[in-house]
View 1 (spheres, helix red, strand yellow):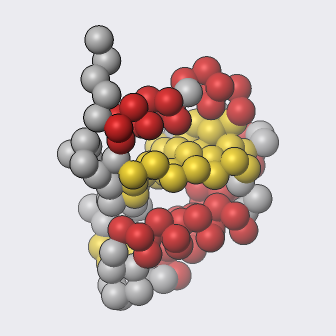
View 2: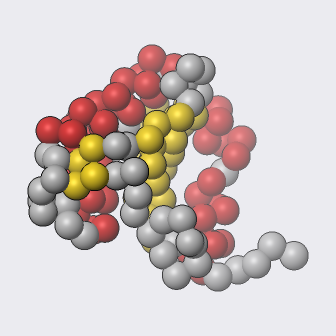
Length: 123
């Protein structure tokens, strides 16, 4: 459960901006944000970025959690650090996918979430 002890990131937009700042400072590549709030019950925004290695992907996630904690956001759930090919950080209103390029190309989440954002059903 995400606990926000400050009002610094009191909107999804502010939380997204903070996450992007952290990703950029960790040298994450090809950062994109997709607004899915109209078609998703689990989050408002999906952020997707690329790390260059297992260690880099995990370091990006660790620094994101640390950055948010320093700014009063606690309880961020992180999964995937054992392998470091695809790490998911759940910030509540923002989900962050940190992927190695091979996983990003294989799963093509951008296409999935862009279709979701546009309200296009799979059929």
